[in-house]
Image (cartoon, rainbow, N blue to C red; front, top):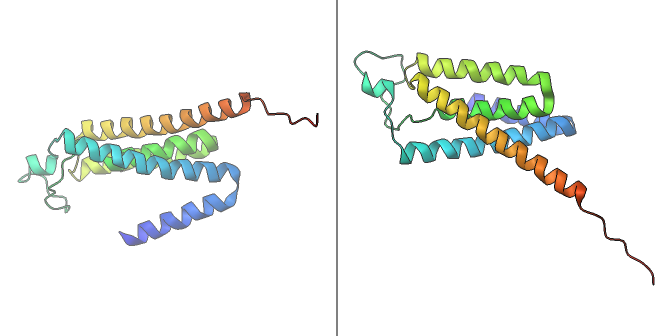
Length: 156
């Protein structure tokens, strides 16, 4: 799993260094991942729901083994949805790539039996909500910053 993380860190650094638009997209995507993951952890701790690989351990065996954590909302789906939201907002059509990655990540989580379809959908909703919250907070901050009159210093 560490090679994937190394590639993601390199990609994030490249996006931050590439320019202001990609920098904003990368920063908001990283913040979205942190907040979406935290939100999913809270849900898993306070509203525990079993995973299919736990409920149907004798039927589902795609090599992921027995998981002890709950699967209320898929953190993978939430994280990728938050990234897709940020990329689509800041980079428009480049957001199609993370949207597709989020979709196929969710499908893969269902296929390997670690999440029910409803848990993946819940994860996508959490991720999109986190992305929207971050973007709308940013837009609110920017509008307040522009509306604030500058203080004029006089020499009287």
